[in-house]
Image 1: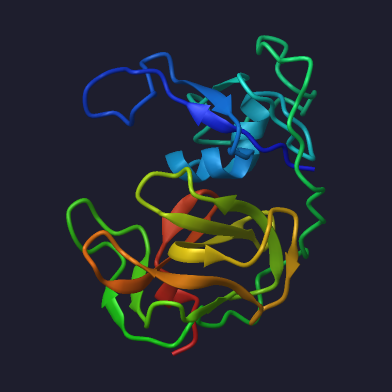
Image 2 (image 1 turned 90 degrees about the horizontal axis):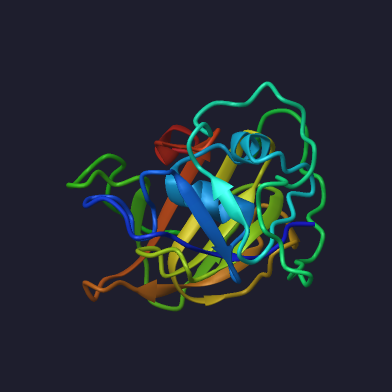
Length: 227
């Protein structure tokens, strides 16, 4: 079970994301999951869990303080449950259980929708962490491979309404800039299942923002999608 919570970052040094300070801490709020926090900072969710001694099913709590520093690589310590240094309220906000994801490599990648790539991976300043696919507003967005929805919400700045799917212990896919979400956290999805509807960006462009993350790091989706 993944516990939903949203994170409040502390105001810190200039140039860093709002709420992130030099101590490298992050305060969980309603709406976040461990996966969404890791996604925001380009971290491997497994490493983030280990550093904070959070074991499966990766339940987190509102107002819990998570360490971000040290999460770039997996800790050698064994998971021992939530960090004792975090203040946990008596009441937690729990999400539906997240089923196990398939073992082994991701197979059967498919495009999340039909449309032309209007901005490639790495383009722009700052670099694009995925690709932007042109599509009519309201078009169906589908899962690119089998997996489990580990985030469905709108609290990650710059992504609009976002869905994150965990395919296995190494790969996640993310679908942003939607006008409507059709799945919830904890849902198991098959490749081709409708998960969202395309929205319109702040620049008044109808498109889907699509990312693939491998061990927390953005990789070029075109390497995995069929030609």
